[in-house]
Image (cartoon, rainbow, N blue to C red):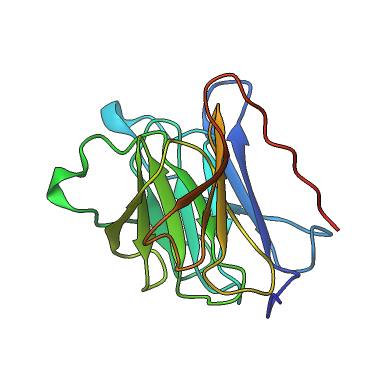
Length: 178
């Protein structure tokens, strides 16, 4: 389970189009603004997705117009996450954190799952999987699910490999939780 369940973060876009981000260490009772990283052209990054490590010490943010960035100081500073040179354009990545191991983050870009084992600083290519937001399982390290538009995929090795559980052209995936 989460070592610091009270640490949460949020990102969005203000009415003037600027990026907004905030972090809470008390489960959302109070919020401290975080500075958004700069996007191309000097404008602030906007919305996107943010993930908080299981122990609350690291953040990975994939803003809408910027490649993923990470912070290990509660969003005071942001640093560009390193990806393989052949990863291509990284804007629009879908990020998540492992819910047990605070060092592991996932970033789904196009048809590849990238995995970080150092708190979001460096990502390496994992398994091939259709684009979809990674959904880690609480309480089980390395257990990850990805739903694409047509199928459901499962990894039990922190995104190194994926197996298609169900789906395909013209089919649906029944899912039961509990």
